[in-house]
Image 1: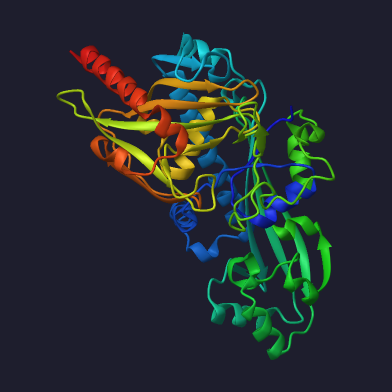
Image 2: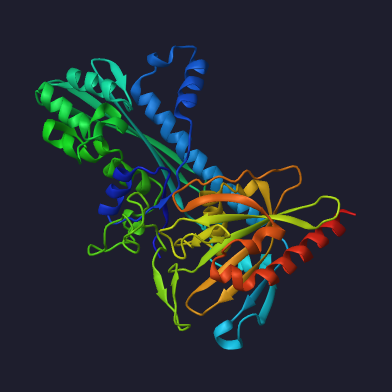
Length: 443
């Protein structure tokens, strides 16, 4: 299996660059407050933010992105290390639905599974950021049409520099590398009509420097000195050098073949354009007669809230699934396909954050249930809010219509996704049993 590469960005151009280079990365958006990072940097240096050179800014921002995502994986690893309770396994194709065929402790289950948290090298996390300088002035994303037009008028017939910062972290060893690539870009003369038409496409509004090499803007670039991929947002040669500096061969990251489909989401053509194909995405044809999502299986977190005095479960956090998804419009525990190299628990914790804003350090894992179909299985992870912690639900991606705490008494009034509908009564009993055990432990 290829060594997992995690891109700390939702940037489509960056992930397309990696895809073209034979790598389907796992996408983990960092949600870093870029302005706050630069303001803090300026405060520490006792300078005006505009005085910080572009190459220093992109280095700081790429590092902040990679470190934020690395921290989230460390939180997952810590949650797994502290998991309690036991895993129940059912094999419905062999023993009938609802029959428990095996029980083992959560720690036994974790030790028996491949997991990112126990890799000897990797996963590798890469963060990037880009800025453009022209005549000593640094430009990020213009955001507005007027600002984009003003910048394009200045760029007409001129040459500027595109800076791209890279931070690479090997999660296993903790080693961290940094590099900044640069390329000089010369622009053709742009007429007023050229600028008006280009801005009307919307392309220059959310890209560093108000132009792109891989889109409409390519026709207005007359020359490049340096690495073209760095202009797009990630220097592939620079990243390869960084990877190999860790003693890892670049080809260890290849997990695609030349005939693989587009990274947009080949398995679901009705998905939103920016919903990306991640490692492990795909359908499994099962002997039960159904297709199941997740080449490595799938998992999710059923998070419960309990009354601190009685120990009774009061609410569960549920996801209202996007209409384009499987069984769209139903309610279920936030979750999804297990990525290459992940354990089911790691996948559940990652997916539940992406889809419902459940931070691993805010919850306690107290058990799980695996419905094992042989080549495919779904793991439901049972968890509770930590004492003193509050999970505030929020849809962090496009796979949820909404996420909310639902009173236990109202769950059956919702249209549940079929597996949860089938197991709901047993899951409630399990949650109540775990909650009472937690109460007894506190006494």
